[in-house]
Image (tube, rainbow, N blue to C red):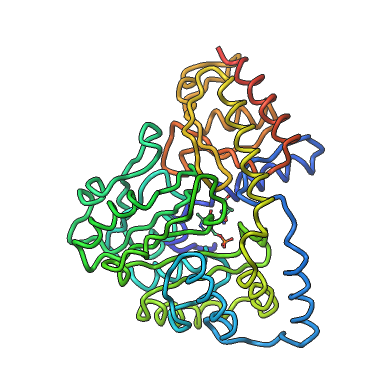
Length: 397
Ligand code: PMP
Ligand code: GLU
C-alpha cells in the first residue's frame, strides 16, 4: 500500500486547475460548458515571439542552459524592470523560472522555516497558501472585504506583524479580485513593512500590464524597503504565453542566489527555446499590448453591466487583471428543488450543472462569500455565460 507523505496529504489541489479539468471532462462528454474558470488569456502568443522561438530552435538553443536563465534574457529583464517599473535590478538579482508559480515556490522554500508566519491578504491567489504550507510556514490571513475594494491598509498590515513574521505575499493587480493598489496605498504598506527590517515581501506583479486605470505601481520603488522586496513577474498573462512556462524575480542578491540554488536541484533553468522567445517579449514596447488590454477592458464592462442586472450580486470595480469577484452571499440559504445552496462552492456547482458555466468558488481564494469569473473569453461567450448565470440564479428560491 502506497503511503503518501503528510506534506502531500495536507496539500489541497489547486481549485482553478480542478475546475478547469472538470469543465474539460464535461466538454469531452459532449456538454456545452462555458469555462470561465481558468486565468488564461484567450489570445494567441504574438507572432514575433513565436518567430524568436523558431530562430532559437534553428540556432540550436536546445541544450541545458544556466540555471537562473541565459545572460541575455536576464539583461533584457533588467532593462524591462528599469523601463516599465523604474526598478534597478542587476542581472545577478534576477532568476528566471518555469513560470511565476515556480518563482514563488523558490522564494518560499528559500526563506521559510517550519513555524514561520507568512502574512497573506485575502482574497489571495490559491497557490500562495499551499506553497507556504509545504514549506511548513503558517499562513496568517488579513481579510480585505469587498467594501474595502479588497485592499488592506498599512495599519492593518502592521497589526498582523509579529516577531515570527518572515514573509508577506500579495498580488497587484490582484488575482482573484482585479484590485489594483495605487502608489499612496503601497506607500502605506511600505510604512508598516519598513518598521520590520527582517520581513520580506513578495509582490506578485504578473498582471502588471493588464491595468485599466492608470500606471502600474511596484512596491520595490520605495527605496527604504527596496532590500525587503522580491518582485515577481512573468510572460504568461500579458504575452499570452501560459504554455511556454516562464516567470522571473527581481530580488536582493542573497535571495536570488538562494532561489538559484533551490532551482539547481529541482528543475534547472526553464526551457531554452522559451527563454530566447521571452527576450523578444521583454524587448518589445508594451504599447503593442494596447489592443489586447482594450479588449479586456471592454469585457470587464460587459461582465460588470451584466452582473449589475442580476438581483443580489455585489461587485467592486476591478482596475486590472481579467477577473471579477462578485459577492453572491445573498443566495445562501436558497434552494432549487431539493438542492440547497449553503455557500459559494454549492453555488458554483449549481451553476456548473444548471447553467453549464464553470467558475471558481471564493473559498479557494479566502473569501467564502464570492466566486471568481475569469473574463478571458470572447464577448460572445461572455454574453452567453452571463445570460445563463442570470437565468439559473433566478431559479433559486
Ligand atoms: N501569480 C498569480 C497571481 C497568478 O494568477 C498566476 C497564474 N498562473 C501565477 C502567479 C503563475 O503564473 P505562471 O506560473 O503561469 O507564470
Ligand atoms: N493563475 C491562473 C488562475 O488563477 C492559472 C491557473 C493556475 O496556475 O493555478 O486561474
